[in-house]
Every structure is written in structure tokens, then in C-alpha cells.
View 1: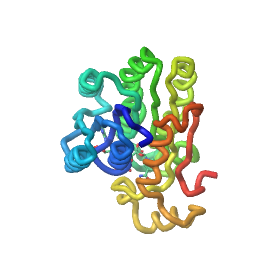
View 2: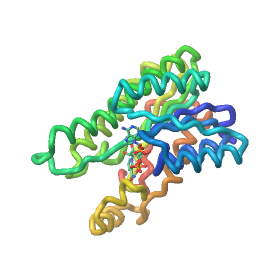
View 3: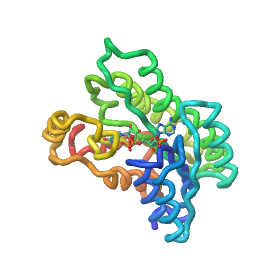
View 4: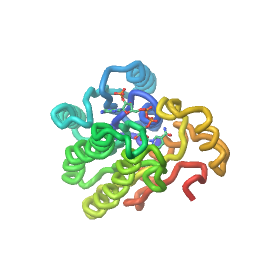
Length: 247
Ligand code: NAP
């Protein structure tokens, strides 16, 4: 049990990578508060799984891109939990399109949810972590934030922003007992990548040295590691979970 006694807030926990992170955290002994924009089947499944494991899953409803929605929700969760020792900023969206045709609202909504949302949630949770001089924050970036991807200038900018944000924050908090790291997944099978056309999917998988898409479990295991004391001397790092693609 790598996370016994941990209280964790995970954003975007209703499905995909976030849901698997929540499931693995519960499996490793954590009590989880999972945030998403609406009530979900995923949350019901996680609550049942947690009960089976003798733990609890708490559903938090908020839009991370809207300060008036997310601030009170995270503050209430923080109060209910008594403080989080792990935070996973996983909520994310795509609004793909070529740069010259991209609507300003598609640029702004991706930056707002993926980057500003991470900033708002972290500001609230990390203040308490700093006071207690303990905590681990894991931010979901992407291989696209490191290497770029045509048709995704908004998403790439948001995920590159996550890397700069992670390293800067890690330097602010390292002396105060709080570690901050990022994960840069490659091509992972989820609803987000189901939307990619079959032909493009084939080309992506061809370019992966391990010749397979990653699983949500591959990513969740790396997050468990970064949230646990197994990574006690690791901060300000970006770990690729990409089958060798980003090397
Ligand atoms: P997904 O299946 O589309 O799930 C996205 C999650 O984020 C959902 O739980 C969704 O909840 C939540 N969310 C979206 N907008 C939100 C908002 N405004 N406020 C609160 N929650 C919101 O995505 P995924 O593939 O699991 O990706 C998870 C993270 O990994 C993202 O940050 C993504 O950029 C990153 N990533 C994914 C891949 C990949 O290949 N899949 C690769 C690299 C990085 P609702 O139920 O409320 O919509």
C-alpha cells in the first residue's frame, strides 16, 4: 500500500486517465476526492470500489476553468478532507484545428481549462500543503507540450505551459516540503484519443518505439509513484510515459 493514509484530490476523475488514477490511488490505500463537471457513472463505480476496499470516494462537481465554480468547490473539499497530501491536476480538453482557422474561443477555452484551471486548484490546495510542509502535486502535461503537434497549437501551448508552471512552482515549494512534478503521456487509449481518425491513429502507433498505445494504467502507475514517498527526492521533473516516443 504505497498511499496508505493519503488524502488526494484528483481533477478529471470521471473517466479516462483520471478515473484510473483514482482507482489506483484507492487500491494503494488513499481516500480520494474526484472532481469533474457533472455527476458520472465513473464516480459511482469509484465509490463502490472504495467502499469495497474500506475507503471512501467523494465526488466534487465543478468546472476548473471557471473560478466562481471551482474555488468554492475545492475549498469545501479541502475543509471536508482536513487537507490533501496529494493533488493530481488531470482535467483537460482539446479543441483541435489548424492555427490559421482557429477560433479565439477554442484557443482560450483550452488554455483556461488546462492551464488556468491547474493554477486555480493548485493555489488553494498548495497553500495548505505549504502550511503543513508536506505534499506532492502531479500535473498532466503531454508529449505534445514537449514536441508540438500540427492542429493542436492551443493544446500544445497549454501543455508546454504546464511544464514551465510545474518547474517554477517546484522551485518555490521545494524548501517547504512540497514536491511538484509533471507526467507527459504519449498516445494513451481513452475517449480523448478515440476521437482521433483511424488513419492518424495508425501513424501515431507506427511512430512509437514500443509499437502500442499506452494504457490508462501505464499513466496511473507513474502518478502513484510520484505521489508516494518512493519519489521523495524527485521534484521539478517531467516523466514521459510514452513507450519511448519522446526520446
Ligand atoms: P478524457 O477521457 O477526455 O477525460 C477528461 C476528464 O477531464 C474528464 O473526467 C472530464 O470530466 C474532465 N474535465 C474536462 N473539462 C473539465 C473542466 N472544465 N472542469 C473539470 N473537469 C473537466 O481525457 P484523458 O484522455 O483521460 O486525459 C486526461 C489528461 O491527460 C488530460 O489532461 C490530457 O490532456 C492528458 N493527456 C492525455 C493523453 C491521451 O493520449 N489520452 C495524452 C497526453 C496527455 P467531465 O466528465 O466533466 O467531462
